[in-house]
Length: 416
Image (cartoon, rainbow, N blue to C red; front, side, top):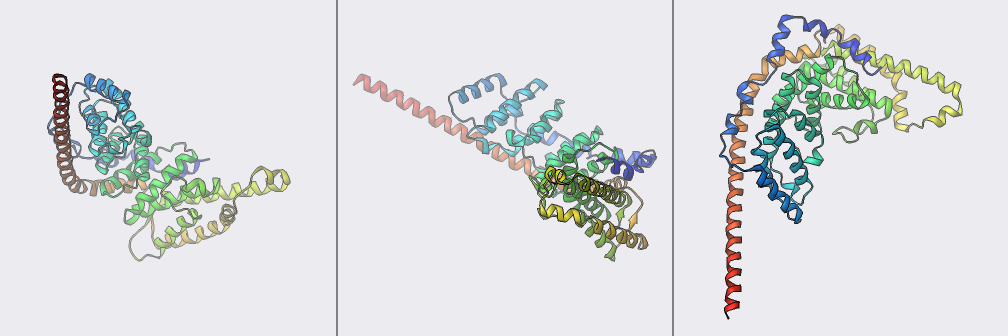
């Protein structure tokens, strides 16, 4: 049932894939070579290390209950040269996260980790540490998120791309237009595959569509908001509002289906040319029909079950009040659809095609500011790294001087 209505409303997308122009858009829906190029990153001053010796040093440090420096873990990640060493670095990232210095994992180390995983065919490790960010300290910046999402999209692994987008959503990092475009592309293409969705999947996809859609103007943003609210409303009707917002950057007040209808009402009343994609409207229609049918069946079961049915499930008052609004929502939806259709506010193109058009029109121009910002950031990271190296050298020299002074004092005491 979870995927049935999605299959029904997104079925038209399958036809679009047969179109030659859409195949061109799909190939262009990637960040440029200049954006993902590693030359700038690789041009940093090298700090060559023997990883076996560095690992032994970190192990001894941990065994003595001393903190390992952020510079040590940064050096280890920067000097990865094989897939096997990626696995070793994962272990030390975990150890560092559970050490006293855990708060000092550097942003450039996170970026380097993702780049090394992509370089040595360990993208699954990058995703694993990202999904378990509390255990590894993986909180990437927007640019790092982009190159990781892009790598999944290039391989047409839209499910993997959506897993990264979920982390972008949880981190509320939809600030860059490039991130918004890549995320909406991944989401719309994944839904076009007509996946079987669990309630957890619906919640994650719904929240990602809603929050990324709020960052976009026009038909794409509005359609994403509508579809996102509909998915979240489905979860709310099935499991209550607490199942929707817990652990999510979402409103905790009930009424996500009402918010979906509010999007429709806003579009219908707006004087501009904003429209809603037909597949998003169709999904909400199918969802309301399925929920109404399920509600009718549940009502008949409650009458026949009597007291046993009441004991079986206790529903929060607010959640029950929201479910009682279902007939009102269905009636309001019919009125709003009529208004949208009469005013030409329903776009026959699926959301996937609308987003693909946005990619062709806007992605290339949106890359420029990102690349300029990344160049500045790499310079700042490198300056900070060199400062840490100098500080480390000074501390070692000071420690050596103190050691020699102690030795001299002991020698003098013996002679005296």
